[in-house]
Picture 1: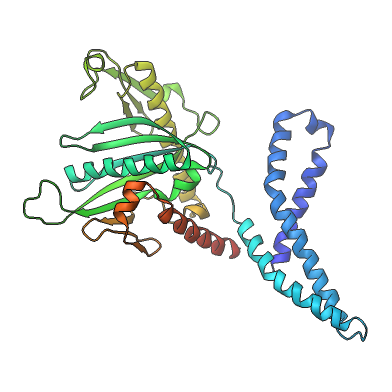
Picture 2 (picture 1 turned 90 degrees about the horizontal axis):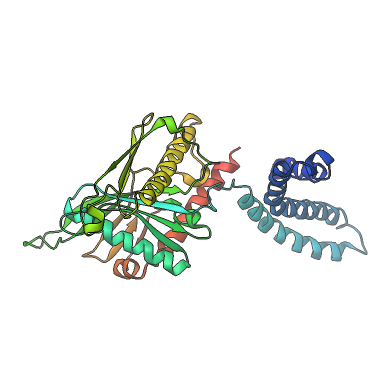
Length: 356
């Protein structure tokens, strides 16, 4: 029963309220901050639960008064209103019961890599990168280019950007996976449609509290930067490669003229990748993912197809097809895809949560 499921949250809220007045907590800023945040997170659920309990109590009282010759008609009218209110409150509470993702408030790294399809895949990395940057602009977020690895015929073999803004990770966390593009490459003389694929990895920006790296576990190499960038880039040992020895993860950055800045950017990406790996291992060991991450973030999983001849974009996870590919790619209005995905995965998380 929903009522029994809610009582522990109310009990915990009241326990925290009492703890926050205890002298030992008042003298411990860190503990007080943790408890205050927990209390704040619980407040919407507790308020809705108390309202729900009151509605249940009022329904019972009015049912008992239905046979009263004086109050029966009034009780019948109030009972109708309460019965209509009850399911709305239940839906609200079920949504509030979905565990929040601790990364939702974080900034987000987007890592795009060309996979099958050679030059055409690299070109699409550039196309999708621009779409994500336009989306960030629409949201009023800031973007920072972390690393670009150019291909020989335009586009990028790999691109990493950091998007900074309110709920950036929360909005973009379902973008991870394989994105497949179908179109006629500029180099195709026969007009045949080719299929290429790129992968997108979504990683929250983390700090030293989230992940700690032992200096003895990393190897840092500096080298001469290669590729485009002008003489100032290519004539100094500004490029940085960091290898995390225990996992074998390698991050290279050469986009800045300063070795220090390249090292700083590379460390940010390394932390994000290690945190992403740690979360994946944690989920695997528990044999369940976070409820809001069902079926996402897996680079082997095809999530979308972008068919240019048909002006069609399809999200295979949720069965959504829109015939406005050009508009979405050019405008950056990804909410037409992101909103339905959020609704779907929230519903999946709710079903999973209500099983317990």
